[in-house]
Image 1 (cartoon, rainbow, N blue to C red):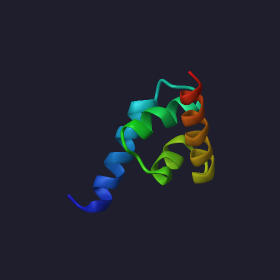
Image 2: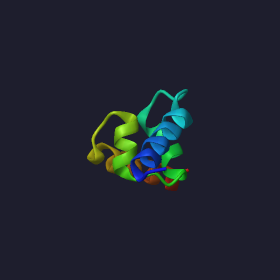
Image 3: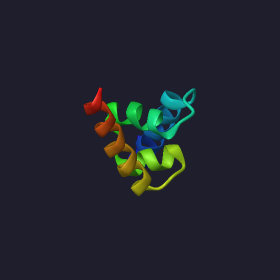
Image 4: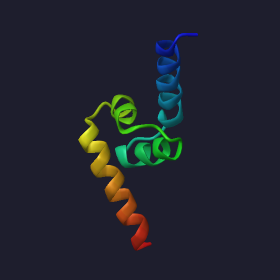
Length: 66
């Protein structure tokens, strides 16, 4: 298996992991726990890497408040 095949498979698994979630913060929380990179999360969530970084920071901040 080539590295591009592995990368594609990794993305497919990410899509499957979050297919039933509606919000980006929920998706980011799950994908982050699975150790996906910001770039991979951006592709899976169809958004920018910057949006992912901001969402991760917001999720972390909300976690501290609870």
